[in-house]
Picture (cartoon, helix red, strand yellow):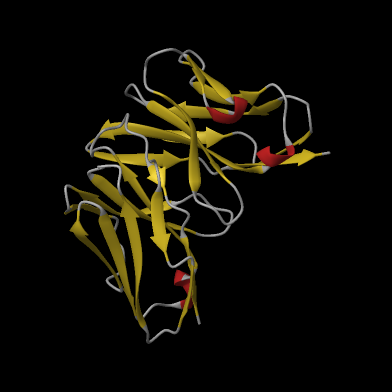
Length: 114
Length: 115
């Protein structure tokens, strides 16, 4: 079965410090992986996606993620947090098995302190 | 233009009312989705339309009735809802379905409150 685990429900950082949001996945097939961000009372915005090309994926707003098959991880990083990064982040896996659906992690809330 | 629009932004309805949520995209996407999102939870898939045909119904109660009038529009008709149906309803679209590599683009959502 396919699944995704976000290891931290809540991450707090100071503005200007690095961000690390952790995600592990489980899949019997080659997955596509996504990170989405959701600001309060807003829809989800795609940050980046991995689809078996380069293992280091660059996204919008300075975020990037590295696909590590040996560790079944897809952690999201940013070198320097900005106040506007405060939001909910979802790691998502998509696997083409019978029905093609997105499987969402439970989310990580990122707080950024001044 | 990678925008999915949803109307209304907010909706308050009684349990005997009939209302509709609307979603529109002009990206030429052939798959459209309805999700329900409760507070502090990830979105839950409700329905998938592919090429204007219903492909997936995630055992959603019949008080929710989806409709896809054309490739750009998706409606969700609501009737006799319960207070526990109060949530953020998100619409999304993707280039095709199935297609695990196709990202989904989400609208801003409709905040529904059932009184």
